[in-house]
Image 1 (cartoon, rainbow, N blue to C red):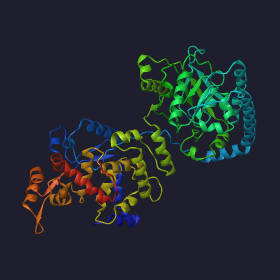
Image 2 (image 1 turned 90 degrees about the horizontal axis):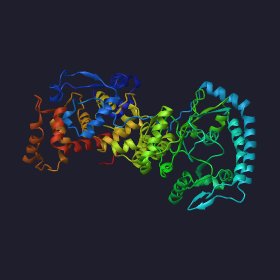
Image 3 (image 1 turned 45 degrees about the vertical axis):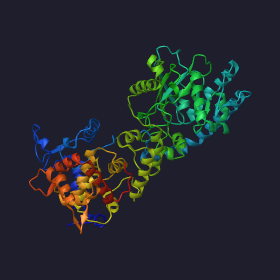
Image 4 (image 1 turned 90 degrees about the vertical axis):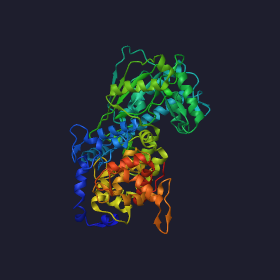
Length: 590
């Protein structure tokens, strides 16, 4: 029985379940099912079997695919036409994700904290903030931050009297942490010589808005930091002035360039002011991985002091200010409703760069990141600013994002703008707003036309690379990349053949394939009185007749199709163009 894609979506659930579980189970098991007709090269391999089933992890499949594309492996080296497509983009842990779940335990704990702890903590926080602003105002009299090409800073360090006044802020900052729920801050000083400290404190990971206060408890005096120029319009300006902060306009190139110069000056031994805290990641993460480090702190080639932050889960709640915590403007309130928050600040030995690192800031930054990641026991990732922007849009759409923009750019040639455009397309298809494309939603996109349930199941499982029974955003990106011609020829050939093999027999009639793609060759056939000319017959013989190895000369196996594509690459382009039309997706070509 033949069904259209629309009819599939409109069928009762009981009828859909007659054929959906079979291919969903196949996908969940992450199997590779080889068709009976395999490439001839497979037969020469030891232990090769026809119709065999091999179970491979998606990770190993993806790794093999990457190596194949880098080495330029021929299509004929592909052992078989697989029913499942490999994951083209590696799955990475998202450093900006935080579900901030509300379990029953968390709800009860937050309600109790709001009734018993929050009122007096808010009162204490207000008193400490007023006193800190008063002292900071006295310290900053006569020494305002000076504007320099959009960057605000002090050219010289404070004298002894002002430094003594600034030190009065230390106990107030500790009280602020207390009223935020940090009863105890564990400081581990792992330096061989605790008196030896660089002027730059490289801190990672950046977990939230209170990181500066936590690091200030681990070093003598009150450290400086880099903040946004918006602070100059707020009461917090007095604190920025008293702590000799550097305020930069992140949208102003001249301001950012000046900020780098000021950081380089303060990194040198001639600076006698407070040490400068730098968060080289540049943005807040969940701390489960270390993202790419910016080079600003390493441009001067001066020694740095690595500082590690560890903020464990508080029951069922992750206090890092990302994900759903960032969407919730009452994050500070939830932090204060906890009975106790915990943090460990670990100070490592001063890292002195060698000659190569001084000449190459990127190498210097990467080596420091590697050291800190090893000490933290976490992995490194290539996430950067583009991932922050993409995740902000994905978060608003409630769409999971488990890959990096850099990987998509490298493997699929898809930049941030392209990924954002595909995200908008994904949201249109995801009608129920679940963050995933279900079989029913894909069927609606396919539109009217002949759609066999078995064929549709194989197509869906081809796209559903993780076998979850739904298409996530990463898998959707891979689909559009396939149709855009931005993936390997092997992957595109599998998709094109799968679309043409509507009966699921592993063979495609030559006439159907030639009718579908025959108009796309550089040598276009001509017609006379409605009949194809001898030129078309000659081309048909050349393209199909000589490349067929099966007994049935009127059909092509996947091995035959691979040989055809090897000899005539334009066949694949034409077949993919047909796929674009049948899937009703508007995709920008290569």
